[in-house]
Image (cartoon, rainbow, N blue to C red; front, side, top):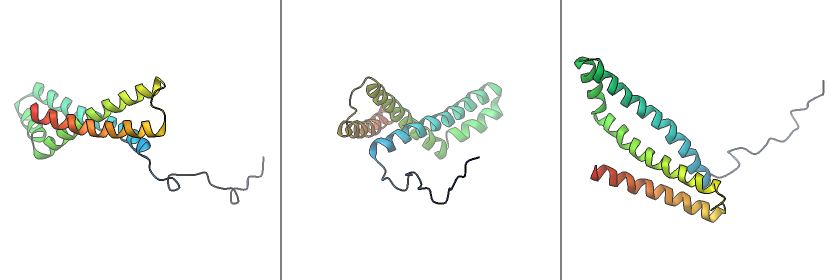
Length: 127
């Protein structure tokens, strides 16, 4: 077996070396919002199952979903849905070979953030 001298080998660059960039952070948040939407979807499924189960189960689930915490989760889920959708559109644009330069990618990230906030406010006010 080869003699591996791990003590003298340099470490590869890691997150502590690089400063966070807008494009990387928006991409990470697309993944996080996707996972958060799964949790919100499970909460909605629980609400539907409780409605089909009976009045006691529905009262308990409905009390949670309509509480301040449930309202907060639902509002943030609306934002996560818009943000995740705009992130998917941005990735489709990248997959087509467009907007791959750094300045264009950062502009797309800013547009994605601003559009998701504006669409969330519009959705909450209108609907």
